[in-house]
Amino acid sequence: MRAILDPLAVSLGTTFTSASIKAKINLASDKIKQYITREMKGKLISLKIDSASRHGRHILGINAQFVSGDEVVIRTLRMVELNDKQTGKFLKTKILETLQMYKIELNNVYSITCDNGANMCAAVKDLQNEFELQKMEDFDINFDNDDVDDNILHNIMHELKDSVNLVRCAVHTLQLAVTDVTKRYEDGIRLVTTVAKNCRKSSYKVYFEKENQALPPLYAKTRWGGTFKMLAHFKNSEEYYTTLGAKHGELDLKDRWDFIDSFVEAFQPVYDCTISLQNQHVGLSDFYMQWINAIKK
Image 1 (cartoon, rainbow, N blue to C red):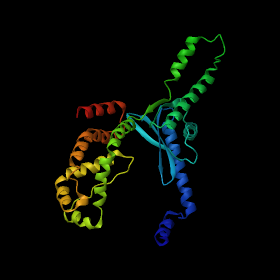
Image 2: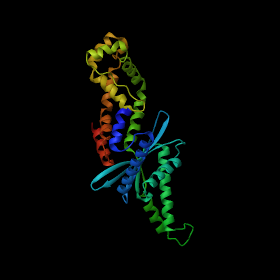
Image 3: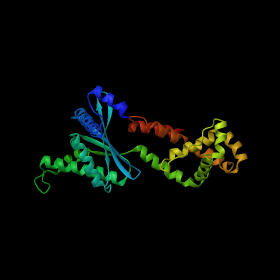
Image 4: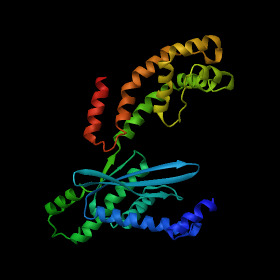
């Protein structure tokens, strides 16, 4: 590796060491932050927050969306590794830290989109309260003062509540609704999944290779779309699997074909809707039209 890298380093007038690479990455990171900070200055921002866990690590992702010219721009502001309990107050502090990194004032945040997690929603509501308190301090209003006009207070509070709006992700809500239905059919799904796993046994692989047939896809338990793709795979290759099942009992789906057909027919419109909603810049109006189309199907 050194034989390849060292001549390149000499020609570039630099060195490739763990320390120098770390320094260059930090430098590049700072330049990107400065660029995004200038890009967002004075603009109305919509944030998107989401968290994920993998291999024991918990990460909070924070994106910003804003309009530049006639385009909607998305920038990933931060990926925060979380080592404390993910309460609403803790998440709020991480969001405020991120805004400070990019010199974004809270009154420039129009909305925050998140999933339906109680902690996520609590974090946004805490930010709403933070914003209202900041603005009340700016207005220097004393609520205990009897001379303060109630109408003025009402109008100010009404105006403030239109900032830092909580937007629950429509796609996430749709997925929760679908999961509530699919979990009723776990027994049927489990039986088909067993056949999908059996297909991966070495004794059957030769059949798939000979016929140039793809193996049935497996899925993550938290993703109902994977379940749909597995069942759709069997439906689309019913003749092949019927022949295979007649020869090998543990690949036999003869008692499951009605279930597979019904499941795929029922969920095809919702699956198509989900795929279309994974495009960039899908607004609520787009979601509404896609959902109306799914209902029609």
